Image (cartoon, rainbow, N blue to C red; front, side, top):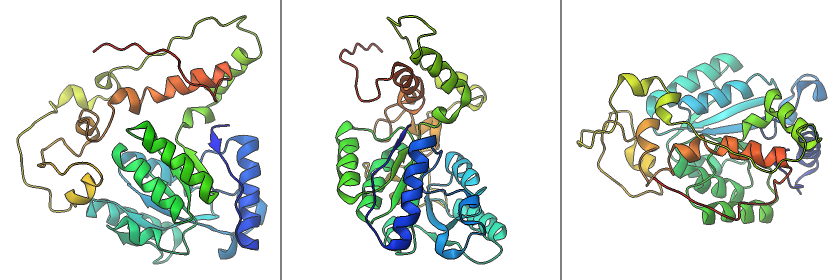
Length: 296
């Protein structure tokens, strides 16, 4: 599976729940961490519910949390985002879904991680925040789902791996194509010999302009400084990256993907998918490339 799982040592109630999550993840490659099917417990009593916090609820974060909210035994208690409008929108939607005033809004991630009632976090921020938040969450004793790409530097990724092992956290990285039956079927064909001996695998990443229609109707890339939007905490958005002047496209996916402070480019944001499937189909998850060549 694509889920990195380690055994937890916690209280009896939490240990029982985590034990189930571990086994389910190993068996089925569950899409998200710590989401227990409602059939296991019947009605989702608060003691059996997985309490979650969401970091980043833009397009990707909203899609992730919508999927999780289909499980009645999972509930978001906290939302943290740099944009006030996004925080308000998610709180309103989730409180309506849950039928009460349950969700608290935050701009300070560390305040969220200090909450003892949060079991796990969903991290769908811009790329440069992924691993710093995941490391902090592991240190705080939270299980983690973190979107791809995992980090902007391998040393960050290794540091997260070390911290997760040290703290016995369940960590899942967003290689969601492994939950798609078409990719699984292709990998089963390859791994069971139906494609004969595989001598070469080629993967490629499309240009972002062919992936998003917005790029063909709006010219992105302005470098002219403009005032920060009233609902954006720009200092928080920059986070572990250098503090720059705000520009129109800087905090959009189309801007951030092309700024080295925040990302490794679309080849990391999307190219991680075909590389991951190639590794899966070859049954070489625990190896890495031995030769690189790049132009551009």
